[in-house]
Length: 65
Image (cartoon, rainbow, N blue to C red; front, side, top):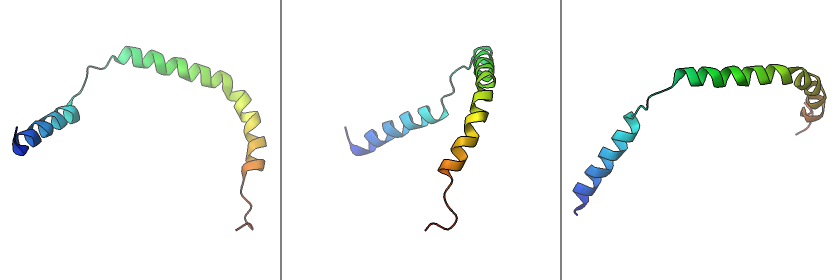
């Protein structure tokens, strides 16, 4: 197969992949996002307490070069 025909096939495949839009199950996406939101809100209190501790330790010094 010549280079022109091979390049044309690769271009066609690339174009098909670029513009391919699989069907999206929006109800499943909504359930997944809601479950993640409920988990993060339950863990949010623990993260807020730990966040203050990490901020002091990891903050770079303004005078350090």
